[in-house]
Image 1 (tube, rainbow, N blue to C red):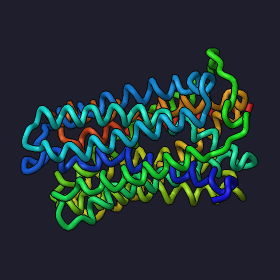
Image 2 (image 1 turned 90 degrees about the horizontal axis):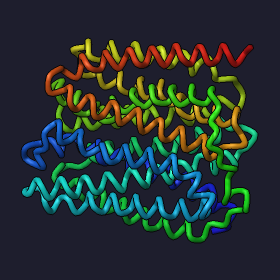
Image 3 (image 1 turned 90 degrees about the vertical axis):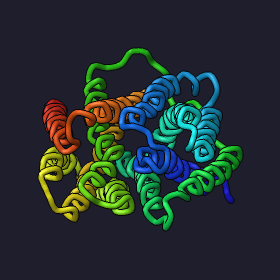
Length: 386
């Protein structure tokens, strides 16, 4: 494989495998909470994402400093090793389903490595993707997050396609093998000095950049709510495990394919205002989906929510990077950390509150967060025009 081809392959394959790894754990929510499998409580299920969130945030924030001391290639390799360990631990957990304490220990260890790997990998891949197509940053980031979205959509879809849900452990086994192949490709990757250092590291963060951080936190809360609890919500609506997994797959598929469509459209058209109104529509959907008694509408609503969310994170990253080009790796670290903080907030709060309140009611509160995201984005765009 020629080295010119190897770079985009590593970037986009890495995005897809990271997405698969990241969503495989929450996509198995129905398996983890089913009494005939692991039998975890809602509190135990939400708790497994705490180490993932914390380590993803810290690793993303520290990645710029790791890159400055090592190189982007070495940091990317370390991230791929962490992801592989995380998926292998998930595979091993199926051997301990009858021993809940040991199974929980393996799962907690797995999500810890998952958070570490995600933070390292995505923080490095964002600026590397930008350098593939520097003249169109939105298309560059959208391409990466399309591949990431393919992975996130693929995990629940593959679970839904299993004829016997008890054979779920084949998926982490196969994914870990592909991750090992990706690690080999990284070893052969050749990067320029600029790509290996990416940009200078600065501790001084502009005030406006904090606005982007808050924007992505709001987005992460919305994405994490449907991404982590969408399948459980649909199952509570009376759908089977397979149909609930299919609904979650539609959400991630909408997220993935929406990103490539918006990325292609951005080559010819300005997408700023479409992104803004998508944020408003997300808030409306968080109110409409729980109010519907029709299972088909709920599933289609999940898909539409994914499409609306598809452009928000790539647009925020490209927008923030464009305004802070000299600190691209720091911007990437902050954006990834903000995303993980948002998803962590939604995952843990929904998990704890779902013991007292119905998920449908909690989704409406998340809708209020989406409206806050819309208002903040409106203010930032207006201030940009001045």
